[in-house]
Length: 608
Image (cartoon, rainbow, N blue to C red; front, side, top):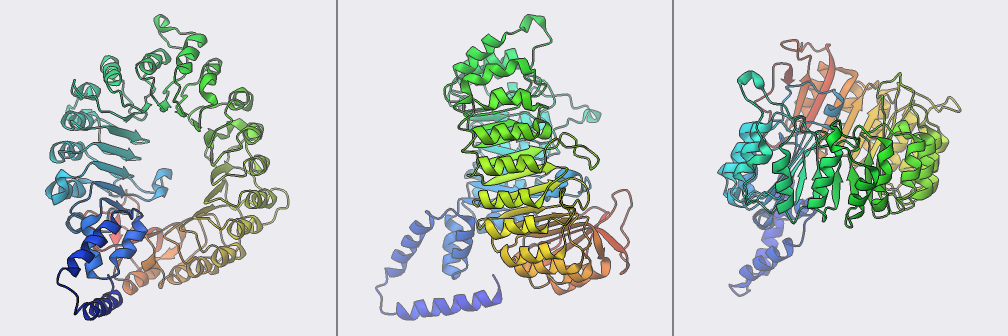
């Protein structure tokens, strides 16, 4: 809490004290009970944070009644301080590395370890209350998982998204010790076992107690090792509340069918592979698989389809009409293969696919899925030299056919202002618009001009926009429009955009609700960075990669904002980055922190 806020709190408190001078002695207790009751109905983190700033009494009461804690950067607060302030939390969401780490722009070994948080949770008053953990881009060790299993007696839900550092020994220790585990979701995480330390693969599925029957969600698509099929079948059969099951590619289509027959109540299914088994003894026919899917009356979400055999796609036709979510982003499927499938999916709200479906595939999606809310089209080949199969034409099809669209991620090689404007006019309810034109500074494909008009239309016409990712040839004029109309934007990602520091100044001074700023390969330097001095304290983090910064500019920010942690990230293969004033900075990561500079920074990270 700032000094001004504390002064305001004192005024409010003195006023309340004076007005209540003649009140009965029990009035304070009544008001406290009322406040506690009211706060229990406020779940939004932003609203609760606002309540905590009213005065010290409200701050204390809010702390004691908070059940869920969300930390957007695990280095922004000391773990022990967090669990001391919120002693009765039941769930914790924690984020580590920024999103650009997914694209290899963050060197391995940078940090974001979970160990300090695990120890704080186990040692805190909340140890007996914590039931749920959601970790994203965090390094979690086997010891951390073992500590959670042993130190949190009522723990029941673990979701690891894009995490690393652990293997089957940690999973085995977790499921063996957590008697009430009902959710174990491993999503896009890097799971490896270190055989150099004589750690053999652990049969972690078999570590579930034989009496364990409370499982509700199990996702292990990213586990690269086979699992004990007998133990998995037994676990699925006795888990009558199981609703979500996502298996890895080591589960054949025949084995998947057996699992489905043991869990007809499933609502979400990840298929793993979707092709004929290599073992002739397990050969299955389309009609057999189709009959199994036909028995799944509650299935609304399907993903997976790795190693897809197109001849098997008709097997899922019986459930297509009830699907609200379909993820085919792991399989290379053509428009001709997609068409007969998608024409059955009239109720689809979420659709993910590779760009191999082409513009023709998107045309069928637009004609069929009138209730679509989220679309993601990923590139089969993410390099700049690739020849993408989707273009501005596909975006126009979607904008004209899917008027309820709220979120889109679209990778392509060519785009036009007209297509983006069409999207802004036809889909005004967009909250997330991420357009990635692969290649540096690519102009409007039809006119050769910058993409300013298209992206400007998005921020002008989409009044609910919270997240914007831009690319292509963009001038300072586009960034001026972002600053003028992008008042609701909270996350802005820029790739290969802008032509001077003025563009960055427009964004920092105009986007008043900006929380996260990610910039790569853009011509922004020290002057643009220093334009944000008065705004950085209101932001969660700023990440600049391959821009035109120098150590001098970064030092000036660190000197002006002592509560901002300013990290200069060098080459991990060089012991220590140079810190002369005129030395260029390749990677800059800044974030606000109540805990101050971290103590686990590697040699290639220098905190100014």
